[in-house]
Length: 314
Image 1 (cartoon, rainbow, N blue to C red):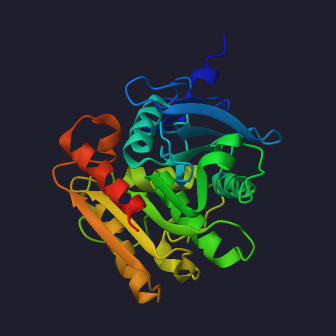
Image 2: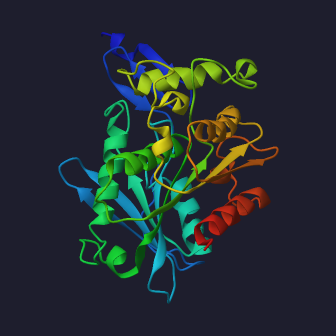
């Protein structure tokens, strides 16, 4: 019996194991929950197909409300570009809470992930989802919830970790490529954004997860130019000042390796001439995406209130 098929060629801890015969096993983020009605809040969710050709889909969330025009939030889940989906329990729970507390319609994009679909597939899928949303600008698009309730003049992009990276790039693409898209992007919300760079900043050199972050990027994007690729290092992106919104909220966590990159993002936008308003807020004693795994904590509740205030600020 040939046991070579069981030999491990590569493993990224907690995410994926790749075998020498090419098979791979995702080690977390594979559980899913169905859409439906959340009894305690009355938020209703459903899954919709955006592109049958690529199997691109999204999970929509509609809060229980009598208001006809609600802000629209397009959300990109995290997971290092490898794991998690729009149907993952942690994201379903989190976005049910956000929909209820912020009174917002949510489109949670189920973009394709690596290694089956290496980067930049996730960015292309995410842009396709935005274009699909804009079909509803005149209230005659394919999805009734967006036609009837979503205010495309009051739209936001958001995401956590790798999803925050995607939200950032969608805002740049929106600002640099989009003269004819019928949506008004009010702001972006970046929760613990996954940015990096070849040169260390802050306390990155001492952090035990440094090698993990770097290995993850090169695995997800085999064609990358490296750790200074503009897709991972906004400081080297010539289009960064094209960010197509006037407001940015960045949330970081004290114990998160990516914290310093979140603070540095503000400096990058400032020195490149972006003229909008940006706020960076740090949650003390917390680690990466804590709000997904401790949703009932006081700090997670405060973070969601922060999102609500940002979205509903007039």
